[in-house]
Length: 179
Image (tube, rainbow, N blue to C red; front, side):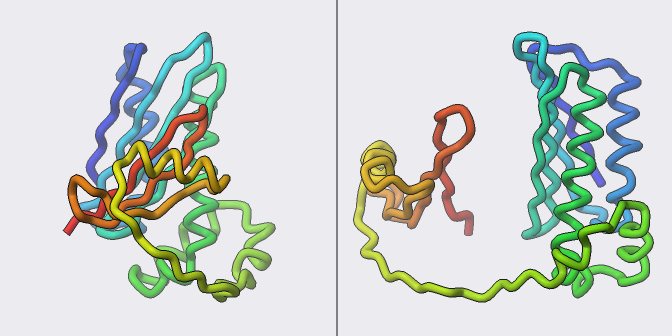
């Protein structure tokens, strides 16, 4: 796995970078050699936020945690990522070796594993919408008018279907397809 460690408004020490590689090293046996982990540490008002994004082919895992110390935030992020992997165990087991995945899962507390495995992924409602050409700003306004957390639209500048969504802190995100 390749590591990209970035510090925003904070200087990262080598021992923290080594700790990141050690903690995320647990995930190396699950992901391929081409997997890339991006770790971003941000300092804001005595709080440190650690955000980890792991990309491996079409799989993307992301977790974020804020704490007074960056090491505490890193520990929380690793626990969140472990839970996400455990939750998606059936999807991963088809793609990865079953032995290495089982060995990794035994390292984490699997107290609620049965509840997560019984989760049903059935579609209960299908809705058809008309996709109208809009600018990104118009799409955000439309999303806010209908009170949804996301909105799909045809981007008038790129002629591609895009999705705008609400993020934490009253900010917005834009999803664009990559072909």
